[in-house]
Length: 112
Ligand code: 5GP
Ligand code: ZN
Image 1: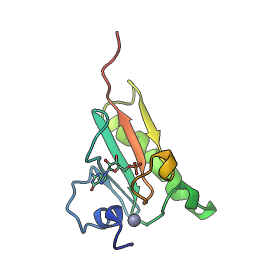
Image 2: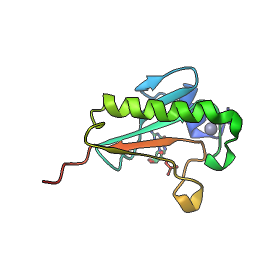
Image 3: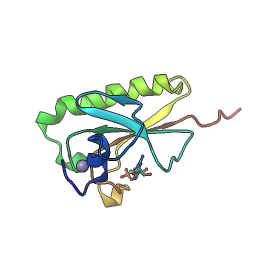
């Protein structure tokens, strides 16, 4: 855990936050500044800076993040209408919090 990292502090329960999902490796909570009706963050408890820092030993955590993302999309009822699962990578890629997180974004109105 990195003390000056807000997502480490949230994921480790130091900052009160409602988790929509939690297991020993991962938490899911709502984005504080949602860019769509459904905007969740899938966050590993272990501090990893960004996708640039993952190694072969992170295979399991990365695949678990996607499986949980898919399950949370179903739970939020956006699985059929569609959604995005994305990583912003480093500053130029839009990353602002340097603790790995997968965005689940969806729930837009259907175009007729
Ligand atoms: P990034 O731009 O790093 O990919 O995404 C960081 C996301 O975290 C942003 O969408 C931002 O709104 C969200 N965020 C930043 N600080 C907090 C916080 O303290 N709590 C929550 N729930 N979300 C946060
Ligand atoms: Zn962290």
